[in-house]
Amino acid sequence: MKTKDKEILKKKSAAELKDLLVKAQEKKFDLTFKHSTTPLSNPLQLRAVRREIALIQTLIGQKEGAK
Picture 1 (cartoon, rainbow, N blue to C red):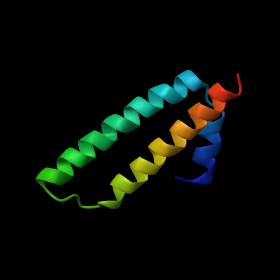
Picture 2 (spheres, rainbow, N blue to C red):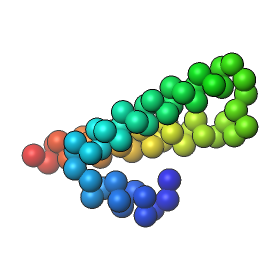
Picture 3 (cartoon, rainbow, N blue to C red):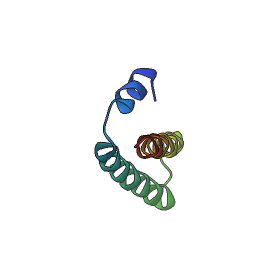
Picture 4 (tube, helix red, strand yellow):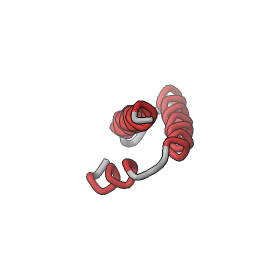
């Protein structure tokens, strides 16, 4: 994930981040399922999605902790 994307995520509200988290988790599930049946052309996509999920969860924790 690029630095500009991270900055955009930091500006979003906790509710928006939770929506993004659900979408990212669905994407991870789909990629994992596809990878278990046939190898992905780019298996590093899984790593990128896992890291995106971790970043979103961290930002949600920071936003909720700041209240």
